[in-house]
Amino acid sequence: MDVGIGISNQKDILSALNEALWQAKSQLGKEKPSIGFLFASPEFSSPSLLKTLRIYLPDTPIVGASTLAVLFNYKIYRHTLAICLLHSENLKISLSVVKDIEKKTALVAGEELGINLIQNFREEKRGFAMTFTTGPLENGSNLIRGLQKILGTSFPLVGACASDNLKFKQTYIYFNDELLTDAAVGILFGGKIIFSLSSRHGWKPIGKIHRVTQSKGNLLQEINGQSAVSLYENYFARDITSLKSDLKYISTLYPIGIYLEGEEEYLLRNILFIENDGSLVCQGDIPEESIIRLMIGTKDSCLYASQQATEELIREFFSSTLLLEKKLSIIFIFDSTSRYILLRRLAEIELQNIHNVIQKSISNNLIYKNFDIPIIGLYTYGEQAPLKSLHYYGATHLH
Image (cartoon, rainbow, N blue to C red):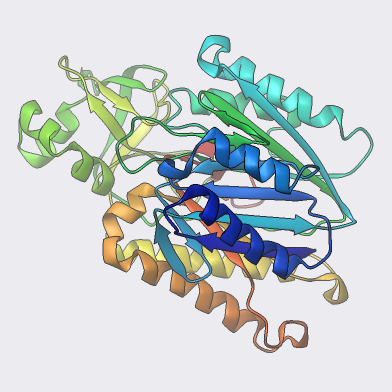
């Protein structure tokens, strides 16, 4: 696979596009891109950007999302625009978009997206799927269920919810020359492709085990027969008004963790809002009768988790096929904005640690002599990935 990546933080949209695209095309050479990825700060998200990019790459499908910041090699960039171009003669790609998710319902939208993706594949071998959705998506878990109903429960699926500048007001999805809200884009990869994926969060359970006694979708109403907010009131010895004032901090450091049998980590749920009746509006569903714990995250635990995920990713990639067939071409990172809020100045250390693990793992391989594996990614308002079951990739969840 041939890869080209480029980035620019010029304030003028078209100047930034020209700079990033020139970098990416220069690395790709004369090859025609099979697909292009665009990650950009919200201020760059405009119809003119996509229409101009379409002029430059008329036959290349473009997908992507708005983001708080772009992860690019071993640095993090705010207020920027980044492009990734991929080319491979052996790569099979199917793309689709679903719009008006709220109107259709997330479950129906997920099924529609899955049906459209597999229609173009027919007999070809499917590898994995990648999705980009506007976020935070209220019923994102149902979108995944709809997709898995078509693609398969344990079919490898990863994805990212678009983000903005921590205002939680408007996020965007890019699909060719369309700037979309309330939408999801799917890419199904297949053919002769080798991949691996890994996810870790590093948050640990604290306190007692609790049971969800009343909930509806992402609205958590009662825990242990009491108002849901009592979990936080009792732990912090604070009333609902005080908790509301510090919600972003509390939700980031102390989310709710859902226990799933057979999984290695708890499934995290941030709290978006606290209702006046004490219900908690979560970023993802929490089914009734779920076993939950209060979770805690620290800078050290986050950094260690990302190192673990990278080591696992590399180990699985190089153990998946015969040596002569292994060529690591690019790494995508979908990183939670919660991690950015928690780590702050150490966020770039996390990315550098990832880069160091990768470079160390390939240092003795002659294929990669004097070559850095390109890394590109974005900060998200929710990730889609397996929790990493003990014996297989496992079902994908909204994180």
